[in-house]
Length: 349
Image (cartoon, rainbow, N blue to C red):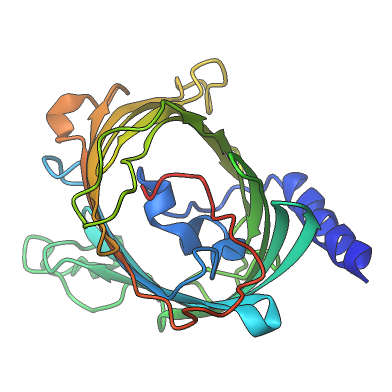
């Protein structure tokens, strides 16, 4: 039965890796590990405790085409079922001459298998309700808004593109992640059913599948000083290189960098882009990302990052700023066996 589950997951991921339609693109977070359920459904419940989190991102605030994304999530570990559950809400707005708003509400279930001592494999399944709406500003009009009898007068008519009502969609996604003591390797595939996102009646515009691959390794830098929580435990210190590759239609990007964790402070820096693989003859360079965060003993994690834009859009665009906030709640299973003591070694951001 376990082999059947694993085989099904990787067949789904292989299917997703072969799809190359190009009709849209999901939003992205620079602090991708601070948006765990958006990165991979298999991460629901991975922390062994209940967890809540919030994310906010604003991109290119100094130009007309601004992107604003915010999300909230909750997940929990169910040790008696070797499972996890999660709920994720996200809203993304693209503002230029019009406002494209995308709202997503997701429910997630994950299941965990132990493959060896301190080696676990998690699978995740996600069902999402998505709603997209498009609103034009009051000053925009098109050719069929022009009054032929008075062409210099004000525009006439409304809804000139016959866009109809907002679009509602169901999206199905899967993911898997292998967790060892200092290593993790994960992959996820979103929008397996490629729902129709067209605003025009009788027209199909499929939302292409999105594939993520992420991995990293944690190197210990030795113990630091003692913690200030009346225990004899030393502060942890790690160097954590990581990668995050994503593809949706013809668009591909790679986040490559590392984190330095000197408890309780985290520093991160990475490069995003694939300069050797241009998209439609345009250089695929995006940004240098710099991040600083803090992990408190109380379970509260706060992160801030800034994207220094290196693409042709330039730094005058304002780059991108991102804020993450999460809180891992105290365990409800104190003194009870949880099935494993190995936690995901990746950073919180």
